[in-house]
Length: 136
Image 1 (tube, rainbow, N blue to C red):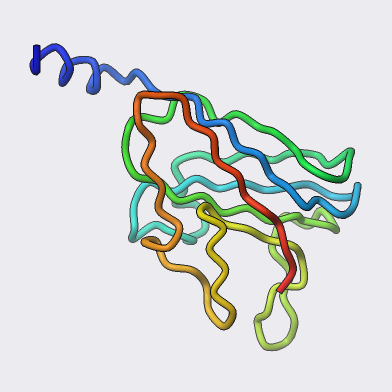
Image 2 (cartoon, rainbow, N blue to C red):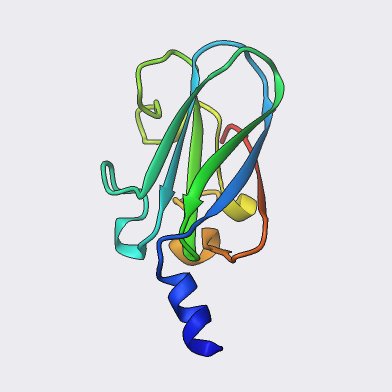
């Protein structure tokens, strides 16, 4: 029985993760979502496991599915790219000027969150994650 379970987990079968992004305040730009599967890659450009870009046509909440993530630990970051330039804009001292959010709604005030603060566990059962966007 254990061998069967281990085989199933290693066959590449994944879990669809349903993500709700709330507190969308404007109908401009796009929301960029990054999914990280390793602590040393967390918040590193180009080192995410998966990413999505959502055009924003409504305020309130947006739903997206991240398909077929293998069982394991992940961290998710997202931001509302209001001007569509593909990056999180910051002011002169590096404080974000666009709304952003992380899994577990981690929001340390004077630094970026850590992997451990944002880490979620994807299990074989249905997954739903909610992230609220906010400005600094």
